Amino acid sequence: MKKWMWFVLVLLFSSPTLAAGCQNIFEENFSDFKLMRVSSDKTNFLDAASKLQKAFVVKNDLVITSSQVGALTCSYYVAKDGSYTAGYLKTANLVRNTVAQNLAGFWKNDSEDNKISVQKDLSFKADLSFRSGTSLNLGDLQGRFIRLGSIWRYKKSNSECEVKAIVVQNILLLSGGTGCGFGMNIAIEGIYRKSS
Image (cartoon, rainbow, N blue to C red; front, side, top):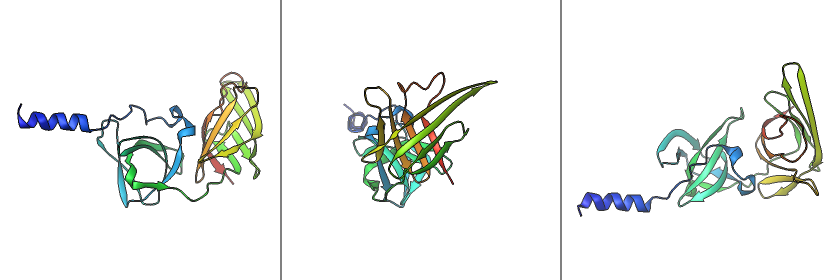
């Protein structure tokens, strides 16, 4: 066998197989999330084919991480406007975040249809709505979050209703809400910004 063929075989079998996921933060299991801080001066994202992307993060940026494949970690950088960049970062360039994130406050999504107020004791009230033409559907949810590592979780007793939350500075990401009985087209899942 020719030398170049051996080289190609070594590359194929030594490279980790990256999940096709790591693109949509809401398709991830929030329970797997960790809030990490970038420790290198600059590190670029890689896509699922291990191709270097233009997007990058810099030292002390916060990223949400989920699964780890070899020396790479699926990571999400959430910008101040609520948009996010997804891809793989070198695990060696990430360290555990030690700065506490504050869930308490008043949060609203971009359309301002959904609002959630969280008190210091982690009790919350969510007012949700969906508009279509002249019709308006309403929903609400009240309860108390509990802290589980980097995330917060609400689980309604004797119900499938569950909501998970993670905060990155002034951005709140909520996942779940199925089984909470909100009504047609109403969802709590999404990206919220802290409102003064």
